[in-house]
Length: 107
Image (cartoon, rainbow, N blue to C red; front, top):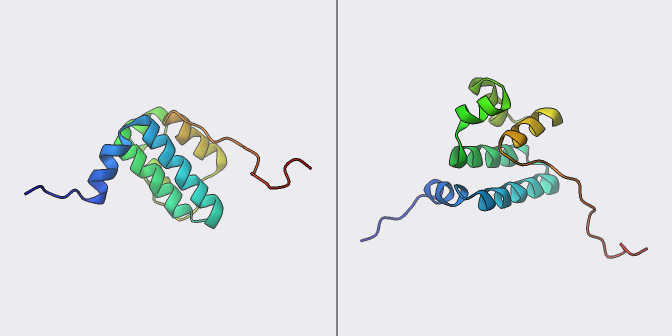
């Protein structure tokens, strides 16, 4: 009989793929923009970090201590934009600004 994976195991396998990880981060950020749930977004980043390189390696790349990084990713407060940018850059991605889709975009 086949052993069932936990959700965490499933995510770790899928998010080890860079494209999947980027799509997952986009999804969690879109959700944050819709409902303001910063915990969901930061947990999404932490999940990708765990699947990709780990907190220790990301902290090295971001030039911060692992304890500080862990505190940021487990906080219930949004990090400063420059801190978020540093973390995302260390993950090999960035935030971007795009126009909202609108039915009246031609006006």
